[in-house]
Amino acid sequence: MQRPGGSGEEWERLLRQGRDRFSNWSSHVGKVLKGAFLFGGILILLLLWLATGIYTVDPDEQALVRRFGVVTDVAGPGLHWHPPAPIAKHDTVKVTQVQRMEVGFRSQPSGVVSTNPVEALMITGDENIVDVEMVVLYRISSIRNFVLNVRDPGELDRGIGDRPDGRTLKDVAEVALRGVIGQRPIDDVLTAERGIIEQEVKESMVSLLNLYKAGILVEQVQLQTVRAPDQVQAAFDDVVSAKEDKERLDNEAQAYAADIVPRAQGNADRVLNEARAFEAQRVNEATGRAAEFLAILEEYAKAPDVTRERLYLEAMERILPDVRKFILDGESGNAPLQFLPLTGLQTEGSGQ
Image (cartoon, rainbow, N blue to C red; front, side, top):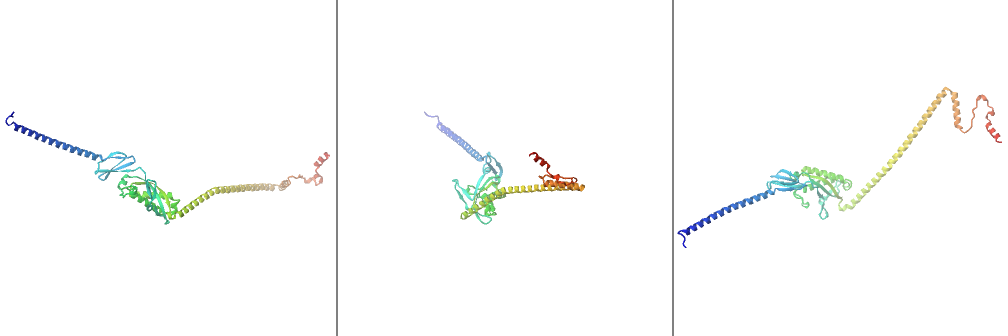
């Protein structure tokens, strides 16, 4: 069967047009899909980049947010967001946790303690050498000052990087400790003045850290081991033992004095009171006798003879209290019969 004239060429032309249209449509769809995929990828990357600005602050932390290097916020605990880097960034710091720094020694996780002689050895005010180990308890008081004000090289053996509680805090602690120890004799360092030394070291550290505006607050300073070098340790132990014996004897002497002095004072007060009582008694007696004498003198002046006789009779009564006495009137004479004990004779005669 034969197609109409020119029909084969017409079919080829139609097929060619169809392929061209399909090719154009496919190219257009591909460009559209390519653009959509590119836009979606850019959108996803944008969302992921924005998500990097999400951060969390724990209850014991604060976050310092900086935008183009300028502090814009101090964020507290919770979930927060800021424009992602390089527009903004944040530094998170534990501000309520009390942290520990060791000076003169290092404690290992296994429990082994090793001495650091470079930090521990120092000279006292009387030019003796002593080993001092100290613990500093501190916390962050100002996150703004802590992050921005001090450039610190850190301290690798403590695992601290570019933070002021690295080498800066260690140097401040050593300076304060050596300054205080260097002003005191070794006897004060080894025995009685440890509490005062701790307080002075703390005050010196607080003053230096405030001068640097480091944002660190020293909570407590604790002296751990304070001892003489190993070469003379035995001699210093004897000295410390002698000082302890001296303090013990002083305490015993003070206790004895506290016991004996009040008793002696009480005895002295008792003797004084007795003397005062005796004095008052004698004075009162003398005053009474003087008053009595004056009264008698007054009566004597009025009637000398009568008063003289009365005084005589009273004196004889006191001198001879148990003797029977007779008072004779001068007008009755001096006949012996008047002195005979007639009463006694009558009693004897009746008994025969």
